[in-house]
Amino acid sequence: MIWEKQLEQWATNIRDQAALPLRLDLWNGQRLQFSTGTPQVIIRVPHVSALKYLLQPSLDSLGDAYVNGKIEVDGKAKAIIAVANALASRTLKMEGKFARIAHRLWHNKKKDAEAIQYHYDVSNDFYRCWLDENMVYSCAYFESGDEDLGTAQLKKIDHILTKIQVRPGDTLLDIGCGWGALVMRAASKFGAKCVGITLSKNQAELAQQRIDEAGLSDRIEIRLQDYRDVTGQFDRITSVGMFEHVGLNNLPAYFSTMSKLLKDDGIAMNHGITSTDSESGDTPYGGGDFIEKYVFPYGELPHLSLALKSMQQGGLEVLDVENLRRHYAKTCGMWADNFETHADQVKEFAGDKRFRIWRVYLAGCQYAFQQDWISLYQVVCRKAGRDTESLPWSRKYKYQT
Image (cartoon, rainbow, N blue to C red):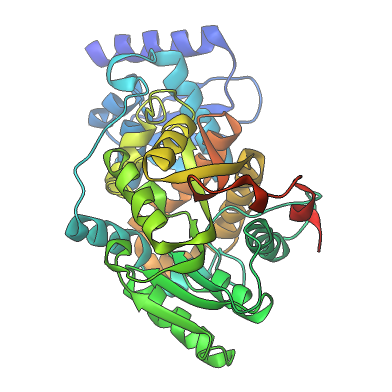
């Protein structure tokens, strides 16, 4: 049969390149081994029609097949991701639709709100299963590398607030405030008066509840609000894990809005994921397509150079840039481990399909950071055209407690 020849040729090609800890179990009882050792991953193909996902195994097609039950996969999430990437790289060329292509999407307030709500309004209980106790959903900061997740997340927040030199009495705007961890820390430890904005109803409600319980409601205001609708000016502005939702074409306008909201002597930080492709292309082999379809609708990652150029176009001067790629790889790995540990609870809150989506997404993000497909930068900035006298002589202050 035709499929037998195609499968044999494909399997031979994979084996000839290197051994893989993979076993393929077919619907007819046939088993294909791709190494002599014990397989770490077993893919079960229940019908001949599912072979198409394997014969051209982009990360998007393999993800589609797994998420929709066309194939069954046994193994730890990190091993599954490693095998999937090996199959893709050994079968496909990083060109055409599998290359790192930049997709410039059209954004508006309605679409952006829908995208945020799709991603974040799964349920607070879902996120609580695998985030730290403060529910911080962004890259943690590991000073020594042996911190637990909760400690590293608080260190990240303190690192941000120290970098932008938050002082008692400062007004602070947090664009994309999540469940309120940063504004709560800024108010309680640094003495700031904060406004946090989000487009997620679930986040806003829980953030307000946590603020009330902590007795911080006189110093923090949570708004369900688009950043384009904010008025007034602030001493400090933070944007953590937010600009990935803005869109490549909208970045200059986004940073222009940030500049307008910043007082003349203010300081801001943008903390966000970037593409490592110089043209702001997606992750290769269809990985970006899977994320767009199932996880982050309308998400776009700029290259660092585009982010910095857009800041300047928006009227901001870049003061400091720090790469935290290693930190985000570790963060995603810890999230993926928590996700696996609490798999039964996650399925209860999110259902089997969403469990499958996020299982491969979190492990896939760790892999992407490890492979230098994506990165994470903290960029400190202020309004352009200011006098040099207000600038610190060194970066030493950032590491003083």
